[in-house]
Length: 383
Ligand SMILES: Cc1ncc(COP(=O)(O)O)c(C=O)c1O
Image (cartoon, rainbow, N blue to C red; front, side, top):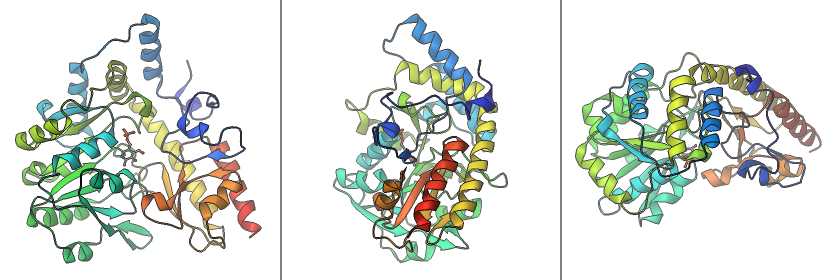
């Protein structure tokens, strides 16, 4: 059995495994640090159960294990001091699916979907799929940290029933919103009678030990009534290929409407996804703690080194394993192409609504990260 710490060092090659992340560049010598998928093996408890299931060889339809609902509820209370009921849970085969179902739920009620930019691309594309306008309010940079621009929000004309899509913690900028920021945001939401879809997929990945995640809906019953929370074990335990996510919707009417928008279109997660999610949540806590230490080390290394490169400004993420970089002062027209040509495949800020920026995935071995940073350093020094 592989020890936890080794999992972050001895990673298997993903070349030829039909990995989205690693197949993008095929046989080209480009280190893929783009899509949010880590190179680490999932926790040993997940590997053991997956092996057991494969040895049985039965892959029929599944139902949600009651133990999974139980652990989601208990974990929510233990980690986030948030009491939720099992009845509030709605299972989904993915979070992007949840974002789209949320927009669909409001297609006849909202006049717009508001979101803070830059943001994870499906936040920008989901509204128009359902004929809704996407209103983009840029985040504000204060002391090298991105935060919500309340003065801009207050200038915005909204209609009761509009939807706000919140990314919390925020992808790509890595902000772990504080309780006071969230309370101010809750005031804004309640006074304008908005609804919120709060994507909290990165909530278990808080890197700064002095920061804490507060689920938006945990701020009070009035807030909860207007909130669809989306969560999943997929980023935390590196299970995105197993499609097991969930919405938490405490208001019966809102939950009914959300489920109606799913009807006939959205399948349940696969049986294996349900079972692996349960075991990861139950027995993956030590592994998660090791992961956070490893990611913190990668983050600190990358931020320190990128700061030394002329024309690049990295924003140290408080949460997530994603590093947002301002490359607008790099002496090249297309920073994304520039680094790809130098052998490092990053995410392009344009996809997040921010041309000239880049996103680097820190979920890889320290050795691979060092190699990628060296390539970036060499390329920048030649400009
Ligand atoms: C904020 C956010 N939401 C959703 C997703 C995607 O979730 P899924 O793969 O379950 O659709 C990601 C993936 O990176 C993400 O960062």
